[in-house]
Amino acid sequence: MPNCTNCGTWNPDDKQVCWRCQTELPKPPVKKKRETRRFAGLPLYLWIALVFFFIMLFSSRCFVTELSRWAG
Ligand SMILES: [Zn+2]
Image 1 (cartoon, rainbow, N blue to C red):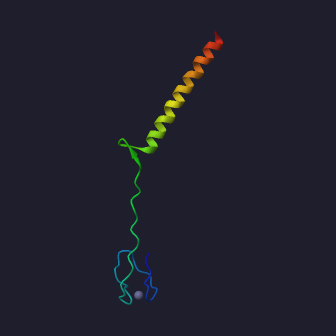
Image 2 (image 1 turned 180 degrees about the vertical axis):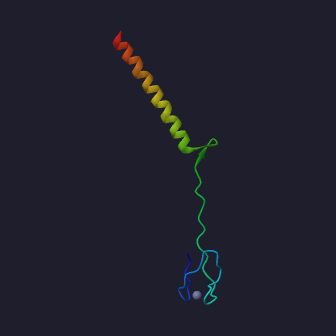
Image 3 (image 1 turned 45 degrees about the vertical axis):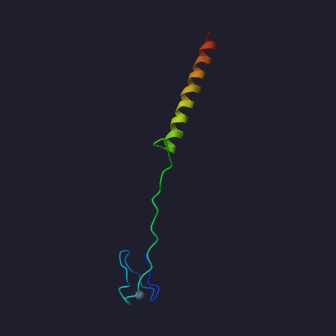
């Protein structure tokens, strides 16, 4: 919500000039699009999730083989 720099009146976001004193309003800062970091076409968090998943899979397999070895 940009306030008029001249009279301090609140103006709607889409207004370019103050509705009260016709002073040109400062443009609101344009929000930058949050870009997801990508690696080989996949977002980075997906890679992390995948790696984590495989680590879990691998470690659980090791755990199971370890258990069966103990069991005989
Ligand atoms: Zn004004």
